[in-house]
Image (cartoon, rainbow, N blue to C red):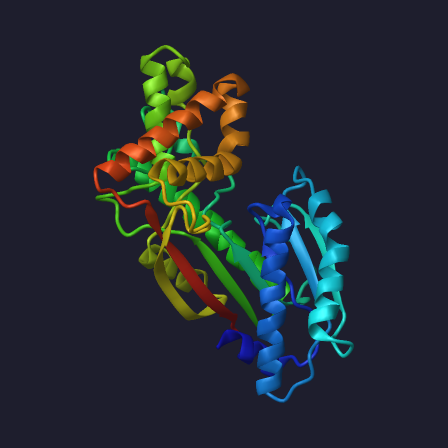
Length: 328
């Protein structure tokens, strides 16, 4: 296991967690922190090592409001003390604003990175899609089964550039033998792509046809997101060369995976998913199409999700889970 190898090499040091999406949710980010602490403590016990001092760095863009997280810390520390007892090692939590496509930490300073639902976000939409006389992805905002080959290649090229940069910058910050755990949305192949982003694109096209939004606003808009296959991710990691792959697998996860089990009604399930993705995408969509259409757009998304369920569709996507060790 990557955690055990990292601890074998470093019996004292810094543990860092990198949360990019939903950092403003405070308690959600701290759940990951708690999980890491429990895993490291258990591994230290198995290896007969003393538990390290924990220092976490939460990363997000400078526009994120970290106050929700900061307000949760006192209660989090108190809960840890109650659960772990007086012998628990100190835990310090900090915020590090900035894009993860640039350097964030000094050389050889971090023992472990944890990135959760973030690496599928690109640094920018592919420039090739809007640099010509005609937009290449007119009726889509994302990679779907109906896109032209040139659009798919442009998205893959942008992901390759960004993912290599991410790997290189993190490898410079990690100690030798340090670990990195990645979870992000993937896909199986290009022939049948079922994504919420695709459904949002369909809803926007409907609104163009009904003159709710202008066609010119949609035809040159592309979401800066790419969902790679496991093979694509593996090839990029191996080509970049800084890491050894300990584990790489695709796990199917429902779009409503975090819903309360009491919510069994299809309409409620789909409303839950629509609200979730509104929280993720609204900032980008509002900047392009205006705040006035957001309620209508996500109401339409909910209806498309319900229709998809009624036709027997599955509300799920593959997630890539990757464990890496920095090469010596």
